[in-house]
Image (cartoon, rainbow, N blue to C red; front, top):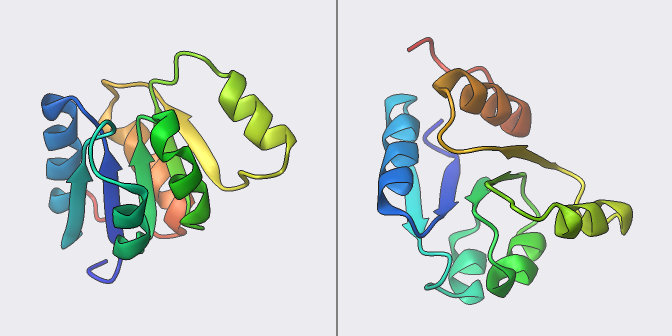
Length: 121
């Protein structure tokens, strides 16, 4: 799993740190956090993530879509954006999860997104 690059886009430090800790526990070596209100689309492109977990901020939506990797969205209050992207066939490999979540829920979504089995924790 060390070859997978995980990108977490989240403003709330508690959730970001918790997600990062879970990925490290699963053995991922490359886990990066950027703030949804900070960072830049160029940073997302430069990192070339294998998987993005995003509290989707419209500022980064184009960069997330251009990344071309699976995306797990969390805490989307208005599903209309995802419905639009899905109906426009722009976003094909995504799932949604609410935070806080059980590690089993996250594990299932990550395994599906990356097509891998994570080690039993």
